[in-house]
Image 1 (cartoon, rainbow over the protein chains, first blue to last red):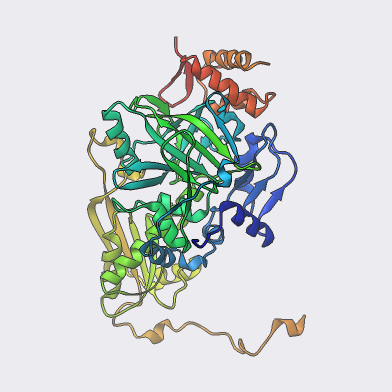
Image 2 (cartoon, chains in turn green, brown):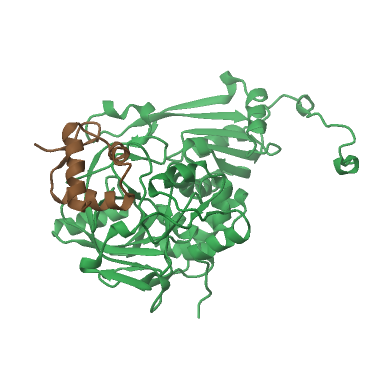
Length: 450
Length: 61
């Protein structure tokens, strides 16, 4: 028998036990879920939502610390743990049954309004399911990804398939045959499974096998009741259905996206839901934009930076994405520098497709402390010597500063990248950077005087 | 109020001027959220919803 790994339910229980979950017993209006998740200083479990039988959990990935806590990892090890786990893939395991199918509703009993699907942002095109792991069967095995689903009717949602993805490629192939593509959507799964699904794995690599590697145990999958695709066996809720072969024809969005700005109204396909299965006491997970989605990309980005720096021969100490850059556009790294190593590190980081800004500091700087980083940027940098700018690099449309609206149809945006070498410059004796140290710091205890 | 009647009320609001889903929700403060989801589904099934250039909903003529 394979080793087991914790489920979403286990994580919620653990957070409750550790006292880091805010459980609200008072009945809430589903209109207010979004605002309450934003205002809470920790993850929230809404035990009673008016008009719904399901509980709601949100805010589990709102910042680095909460995301790491949900994963069960030290928060300084997102990138290194992801890189190591992703190398040690373990294939998912098909199991005969799972709690995700304790309640099964098919055909005319399908009713998405049983789910407390919240409206997240003011300009959103409707309520959104934001924490779904979509599984489809591809030519080279199972494909998993995270896709937002906009509520349309009791058995239909929109799905954003505008961006290039494996699911989009699959959908195009089925669309060409005028056939509906069967998929499952698992909602309320372990953070590792969402993290892995959000990762753009190389072609032929199963995201659920990566999740298995990160867990150190296979992800249990169960056969769906109405479509030939599996779903995560201990998910809280599973939607089964087909992406209709209608192409990009139905309105979807706008949506407050991971970069903290609205994406446009789009034309997209539709998911026709053929079954809803769930636990008897299911918890609906909401991923609140932008940070809960942004943090999903953090571990993979940090892992890429670690790999790039090591490949470039840089002695890397620590790597961190910054939250304000949606956890991918801006990267800070600390290194043990050899002469010229700061610039080498910048070139390696900026070679990655998503990275727009890079800052490199010496090993003594705590890159998770903004004051320390600011100190290095202020006192180690001469802008004419230590700032490098690379013009005409690959960019993404979501960044308004690349003026995507000025591009011709099909033309890809480009950006300027910037690197700041905030390591102590060559030629300046380290004594000039000696930090003050307060007297008797190791000998005096505040408690002795309280 | 039935989902159909509430959908009619939503249609009247959208006929008056284009609205975001949020603006519609704010107009229907007296209605339970789930009833709004049900009525919204009923309204969509009438295939009468359109959008303006800002993504706001309107009723197609």
